[in-house]
Image 1 (tube, rainbow, N blue to C red):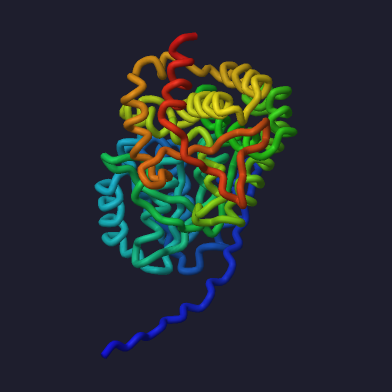
Image 2 (image 1 turned 90 degrees about the vertical axis):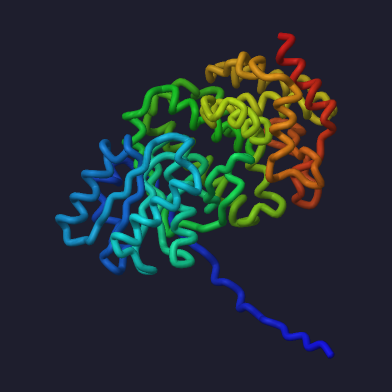
Amino acid sequence: MNTTLHVNIPAKAAKNYPIIIAEGLLKSWQEWLANYCHSGKVVIITDDIIAGLYGEVLCENLQLSGYRAELIIFPHGEASKSSLTKMDVEDKMFAFGCDRYTLCIALGGGVVGDLAGFTAATYMRGIDFIQVPTSMLAMIDSSVGGKVAVNTSYGKNNVGAFWQPKAVIMDISLLKSLPREQIINGFFEAIKIFLTCDQKYFEYCQANLGAILDLEQKELIHILSKAVALKAHVVEIDEQEQHLRMILNFGHTVAHALEKLSNYSIMHGFAVGLGMLVEAKVANLLGLLDNRGYEIIAGVLPRLQIDLSWLRNYKNEDIIQAMRGDKKNVNQEIVMVLLTGIGQVKNINNKVAFPVDENVIKQALEYFKSI
């Protein structure tokens, strides 16, 4: 005799959080922090570079203002985005006495945001956290949307969670301490979302590239606001990447393979730039993206210091083998977001990622090795 019981979980309340973009937000932390820290206990998670630039001062100012604040530091770089680092951070949080009401601040670039966000998602089954991105890449991409994760030997970001922040605080004055290479590294993610979603703003980037990369305030805030708004819209529709949110993975199937093969010596944004070139060529070979559309893309991305030798350094089969481990793949088939024009992708009932024959991928890779 069998008995079947049903558990009915109440629908979750809608998540709503602000993304604030302005200059000087880190210095004026009193204006926003109290809205999110109700227990008076704060843990700031950052890396050893950002700690010296901003973390130590912020922690000291919090302590002087009566907060029980602790700074947890780990070594910078992609190698720290691991389960071992996460365990070490958790041990330090327990030692400090963090509880379910402690506010976690992720202060740093994408590695910090992903690691601290994943830690917040699992610590005591989930605590509140705020993203305070300090890089262009983190501002445009990783700080928005709630995807948090660590890497494993099998690939990038393949152990993680969806855990939305309580707020995202983007202080654009922090970008002024970055070298131009880091600005470009992050800007590729804006190009990605405009190539897939908005032709008008892709053309705006073409026309105002110098001013954006020089961090001129008007153009920078304009482009950040639009890129983040587009990503937020996609996340609102599909938080857990079941269909439409996969549009944000354009260029990433190839990018993650190159990052893995290079042991993450290729920066993420530049890997995405290469990935967009290859995946646009795949769409062109499949007859989805016309030659004119492909030529426009191929003309803009090299202006951002794309180096094709990074593709030539690896055998096609090795790149494809690394792509086979991508977490987006279905039934062991490599799937890609396929452009049909500037600002447009192949979309069937909000399905935007489709299997691609490996021979077509090889053709695309071979094309770049022949030019």
